[in-house]
Image 1 (cartoon, rainbow, N blue to C red):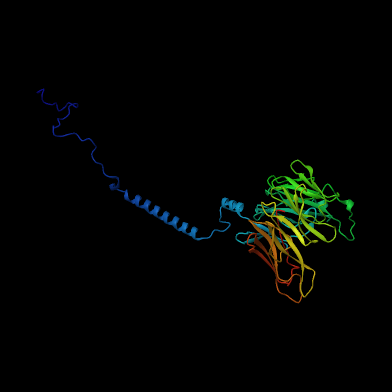
Image 2 (image 1 turned 90 degrees about the vertical axis):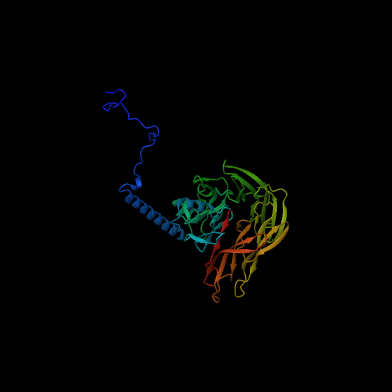
Amino acid sequence: MNPDQPNPFDTNTQPEVPAEQTPPLISPKKTPLFKRKGFLIPVLILIFLLLAGGATYAVVSLQKDDTPKTSTQTDTKETEDTKATIDNIYVYSSAELVAINPETKEFVVVDKALEGESSNASFGSTTPLTAPNFKSAVYIKGNTGWIVTGTEKKTFYSIPDTAKNTGFYTLYLSAWSSDSTKIAFSIGFMCPPYGSPCNEESEDKNLTGVYVYDVATNKTSKARATGVLQWIPGTSKLAYFDDATTPQKLLVNDTSTDTTAVLATKSFGFGTQASISDDAQKILYTAGVNGTESAATFISNIDGTEQKTLKTSSFADLQWPKFLPESSLNYVYSKRKEVTCYENVTGCVSASLHVVKDGQDKKAVEDIDYRVIGFYKNQAVVVISDGQIGLSPNNPAPYKAGIYLVNLDSFSTSKIYEKVSQKGGDTDLQLKLRIGE
């Protein structure tokens, strides 16, 4: 065999490649995936499923967008956030507790079958008391104290059954702290006037007195104070009058340390109604000056020094002075007057709201409940009557009363709630509220 000729049986011998030809650098083309047999059918099915799912989602989304959300559809976080931001003014409205949104004027009945108003000069009143931040309120039902936030309510104190059954103990709502974290309430004792085996010596003094409820901790403690005038703004201190001494004393009880100190000793007068300024420097009060008919409104330092007389009048004509928010000079008060009730019967009482700013006294609105209630965003919150005062059998016209906001600059009014009696008088219509105190 010629050695120059390739051996056809040699497996290591490669055929000679012509010079002009080059071995391929890539593999020969394979059949594309989409051309392979059986590929197209599952792809079409997948596309159909995706399109069907997208269409269903779009329809559901449109339906959800077009349908108003109800309270049951709103998610929990949104409900909690809304509850935390909504303001409410809580009102006693003919035995019902009503929460009124002062911005939207919407309202909801929170509770029913509440008892009528009862008050105590030292301890406060049973009228519901709205917190200064307008997120909560406290109220009394069946000698049990309740706290409500939004419309959710729970009890915070109940007079023990052994005392409750005697019927001689009453729970009073005294005041909220300025930061809305604590509520001062009181338990008073009073014997019925007629035919009762009760006597003053039977009072349980371990039970009666002033208590403080802490909203955050849900705990209650008894304070050393013997009454409640007001929380001193920005502090844990309760101011109160001691009527057992002559001259009268203005005391303060620090509830954080349970210690008591005298703020002022002087003749504040009987029937004292007072307000402490937000900076805790001044006290404004109306009191009798001679024990009979005359009264005056005074302002002084909180220790009683530098007293000035602001107003004088017949006793009980000047009522419930209250400092304007963030002011130690400007204030509001109600001026009472006798009016004709109906059919020329006299003896009924009405009042007008007066605003004193920069030394100028201006009448803002007529026919208010004599007690100036409180403030909401530079507005006074008052009850205004609309109709005859007193029940008139011969005049069955509806009697109306409403909760109004009064602008303290323009004196314009805005009604946020109304209650109507169809019996021609106010004997079955009671509209009461308190804010902060």
